[in-house]
Length: 241
Image 1: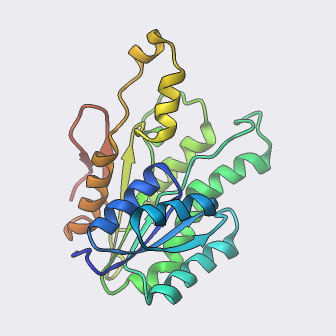
Image 2: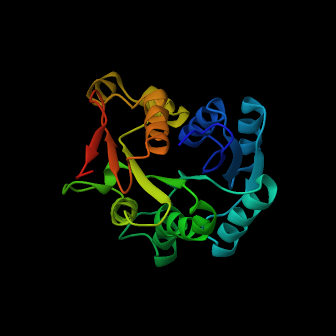
């Protein structure tokens, strides 16, 4: 795919990885819809890029996800690239202490919303569009993880992607990064003791992340593929092509 002139919707575009992905797509010539629950953060992303349609959305609300897709098509005349980047959360409690409502919100943002957004976007994407789902290495492996509902959601997102190899005219891929060097990661590193910092893995640079997104969007041979980013290693494509 030639990204120049294409319409791209990025969720979680207010800060961090979402902002970096939006900036990179803009540099490649994409026309952007910037979606996030943080309207001020999205406005700052647009200021940095110099253009883009702002869409405030709470991805836990199915009606708002539907409005996000409809608004993108209405404001920009279509949709060619969907980056389901929004995720994470600020948990007051984690499973099993979390209430059903609390852990359900994590599943909604990190799995249900990307699935719904993909489904709603398909009519617009069938002429050669691309979906890139941003998961996490929390969703792979067999070791304990401190936030079970998040890990389960990201595992689901990875498997959801790998099943979608036969959608007519649409490619769906998944990027699975380890810890990313966002502003939040920098703050967490700064708050660590020297000993803790020496044991922490180096975060994935944002340019490595955005390079990978561009590859998954641009390479027409990649469909239903999962790309893993780990510190100090080259990107790894899982499974058969």
